[in-house]
Length: 280
Image 1 (cartoon, rainbow, N blue to C red):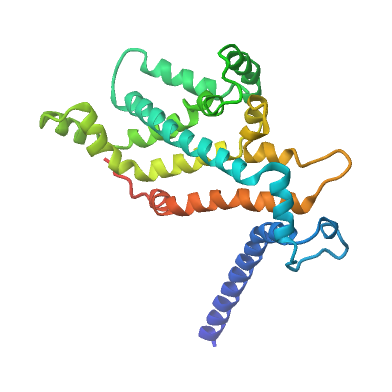
Image 2 (tube, one colour; image 1 turned 60 degrees about the vertical axis):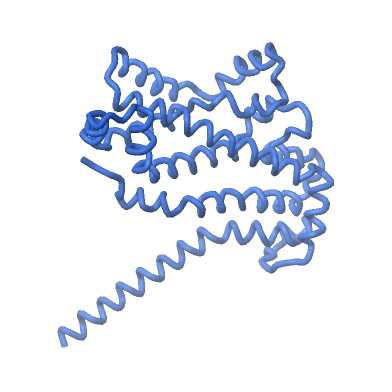
């Protein structure tokens, strides 16, 4: 009898556990489903009562209208080019800076790192006007350089990589030096391969930040040909009329690259979460 009661209790606990997980899964997925449904229906069905939850047949119409309004292919190219180049260059800069601040001992090292940390406390909006004036002075507005360069030396990326470098055994670096390996070779062949989880996590963070960046591209671009996705989608919001079908198609398209980028790096990202990095 006691054994049956114990098994029933376990089944009940498992039932409530799975039930709760299913509820949270539905809550998490529903906004994406509603976004997709909205992209396949006319804008008049977005706020009907009861709400429209079935897939419609207006997706191609909304996509055509979106392309006519903002030139979606050019906008997606701008966002992809800016985000990927930014991630690549920022990873190089932040990784080298973090490695120097974690494994090289020189005067003022902690002061430099503290300066990076303090810069994170400066509101991003406070840098907009100085950046705008600088880009105007050098006639760099409305260029890819203006969209990519200002945040390449990203303090949080340096902090994240530095913490991972600190966990790497310094004894391996010393052994490589004794064997005659140069500093660049040690960095590329000894240290960096074990940093793949950290690099993946940093790359995902940098890509999402740049892909969703709205304020600076809005200020730095002066023509529709240079618009990124957030700026282009914001231009669809009119004073008297908003075509939600177009906007939902645009948001759907904007979501896809982030999902693909995460899926490409998920193996390294998850392995980092599970603690597969080398530790001393």
